[in-house]
Image (tube, rainbow, N blue to C red; front, side, top):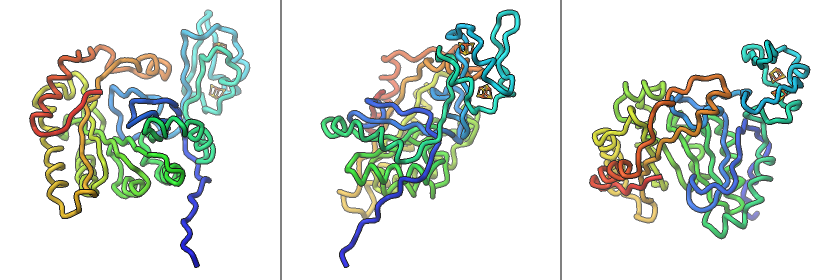
Length: 323
Ligand code: SF4
Ligand code: SF4
């Protein structure tokens, strides 16, 4: 009987908060990036705060509201109210089923995170196959944290691979190794954040210490998979030469570990490093979520400073780029 490849299932559902087509920042070529809801870290500067919870959340953009009052009528839980001509949103009453969102024609109300099956996501992904082929692009799973939805992520990546589409996963690294390892057979490139080498500083900035992330980084380096380690360079967190040198020195040990392994050179892909430039574009999102934006007063670093930090890593023998 001939060997038949199992056809990957398309039935799993995941909570997707955004699908970005024609992305050029999330891996090689032109890509579709699928953002999955839920993250184990809570980095105070996070550029995607709407994806931090595992459940959907309502965003209210007060500056877009035309005061039509439709949402007040639509919400059975009285979460919207006008008092003295001011629109008050009582977030604690909202059960996020979205009736008000349907009634709002001003895009002042948005519900982040909708349940989608793998088949539904693939229908969007496949629209740009020609662009992936021409540009060397593909599909990237991001978030949030894709490994938190490992069954859905695994099926989605398997569907892409079955169609010859390049796959990448962006991970914060804070996940059980088994969840990450499950995705590796259907992942061509892993992009993993390393934000700080000092556990207490890591915890202060992200809510968790870094021991599991560093352990996962070591295990990942042991697999031979192409990896890009990344550091979002955030003022007051990790923008000194010493802090970047600490991270780069750790990555250097992983490069040496991989180069010294017994695997044939073809199975020992290059490990690269990227420094990501901090920006404050997420401030409106925090306001729409009723959350404090603790990075509001931080100044983005100039290109020249980012280059100085990249040079520090490069001097340690780490192939480093700025994004
Ligand atoms: S439906 Fe939209 S525009 Fe109308 S009051 Fe509500 S939030 Fe404002
Ligand atoms: S999502 Fe539902 S519960 Fe929440 S404010 Fe809108 S209508 Fe009310």
